Length: 320
Ligand code: ADP
Ligand code: TRP
Image 1 (cartoon, rainbow, N blue to C red):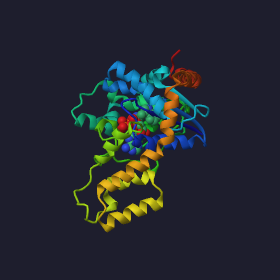
Image 2: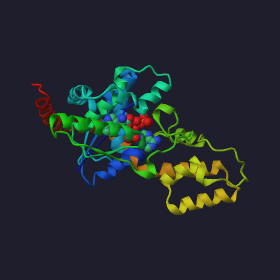
Image 3: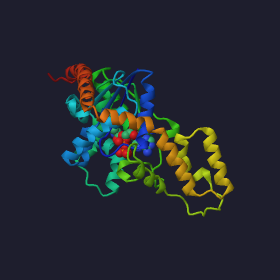
Image 4: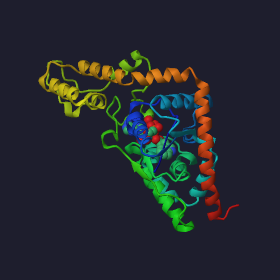
């Protein structure tokens, strides 16, 4: 089984990225051949500053490696190290109707927010399809927001195979129910573009401050509270065991337990959970040659497979 996923270097990775995509991918390292990449071509759709983009790629690489990705088991690379991705994108663009792309939720959301779309933003799902189809991936671990992009990928693969023969593997998304949509501090989906994230890494002070800013209702300290509809409890469930969650839920119902107390418990559980990650990240940051070497090895291994697919694809469509 081949497993593949990517993350855009469009900001600082957050706990939604971790539980929605990184942790499931790390677990899948036991089950198959894993490919993970930093989607820097995708980031260009929102025109980042070049210096910022370069720095973010390195920081995302550190965050991902510190989160448990094992370069001995996983091919880890930078998307832009593989120009084959762009070549396949062009070929697949010519098989994809504009109507299909105009129906993509992420595209419609950006337009609704007043973003003036460039052509790259419209064809974003085709670039994503290329990432996946270039490697004949079977399984793609992602959060729920990417479900439609996987549907588009399948549509494109099936269309290609119908016209040119069975060359591309039709992939499936793998979405973990419990962590499909991790809420942000404002209760919406946590996302780098909504400014509502709790970063995976940061200073104790900054992360505590973010946790303390989680939006709740305005019940007073003495009032009984509803644990079913509270962001703090939802996030606590990611870090605490069943007994700890039950304990917090009982305290909510009993009253005399403030949101400040719950947030402090959440912060402590979260800080402890990521302690080994922080240690690993510090070690990696002190050994950047190793990080660059991992990405270089990834480029070589991924490049060989990409070349094999492109040879078949070029031949099938009538190119050289
Ligand atoms: P963002 O929305 O913050 O820009 P990305 O689009 O880079 O995040 O997402 C990278 C991966 O993390 C994708 O698989 C995405 O589905 C997953 N992901 C992002 N936010 C969440 C979330 N709040 N809950 C679950 N998974 C998420
Ligand atoms: N679109 C994904 C996101 O924003 C990132 C991504 C790009 C991706 N290419 C991919 C994810 C291929 C899985 C597979 O989260």
